[in-house]
Image 1 (cartoon, rainbow, N blue to C red):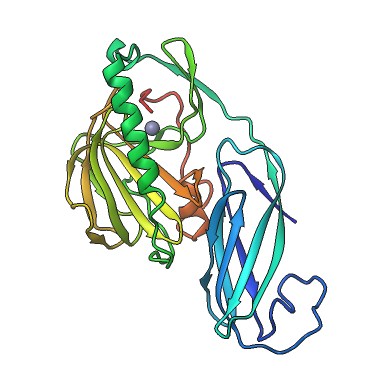
Image 2: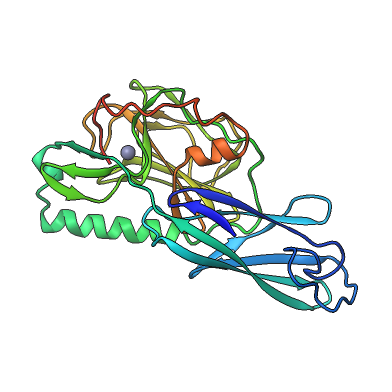
Amino acid sequence: MSEIIVGRIVTITIAVLGVFFGAAFGGSRSPSVAVKPIEVFQGQLGKETVRFYPSGRGTFSALVGVDLEAKPGPARVLVKGTQRAGGYRETQIALKIKPKAFEKESFSVPPEFDQLSPEMLERIHREQEQLTRVFSTSVPERLWENPFIAPVQGDISSSFGYRRVINDAPRAPHTGVDLKAPMGTEVLAVNNGRVVLVGDFFFSGNSLVLDHGAGLYTMYFHLSEFRVQEGAEVRKGEVIGLSGMTGRVTGPHLHWGARLNGARIDPFELVKKSGGMSDKAFRSDAAADKVEK
Ligand SMILES: [Zn+2]
């Protein structure tokens, strides 16, 4: 059984070996009829779809994310395989979701971001619906290639998962990381993908979302300028915008977020797990500028 901490990701790889799941999980070998390699794998964690992709030499892999606020305990990924000829098999992979005690941070924002008028609440609701729609459109194929890179070089000013107290009231946890970035710093696409959202949002200011395919998105908030348009295909390392301080912020920075199979995950997991850097390369600096969302 794989253990996974909330907000992190795990890679599941399945060997096909010409036999439907025959040797896939080291479990019971099914009465083996040799079959042709499976054409499509798809998995499910809770209600969310997990996309597998061919990963060479008779294997299929999937990155599986576990949401920041997922309930700790056992979970299962249900995996289905479909053959070209129409055959079908399924199996389950057990995961154990482990909790994490995130640190707390407190800061203040101007009253206009705290005492919301009915018009503002209406706008926020509309924007949330728009985001929900965007997050249901990921293309099935994987567009990214390892490793992932960071969007800017700045240190972390507010870590992923921080429990937040804003203007003395407990609020939603931090669902991304804030990176130090002076106004106008070039923001890079962390991998290949498609621009699926460009817009001005109440909390996140000028916001850009990339779809990397197979259910993986990355988000870039509080930008001062966009350098790409909705629908554009971008390559890893391409400048997609400039950092800024739009939306609910207390200073210029880049908020970077990631979402995988519907789970809000620490975006640095992508860099670490794809060989882009060591766990120690980035250090959280909670004492630095306290910045928004
Ligand atoms: Zn943030």
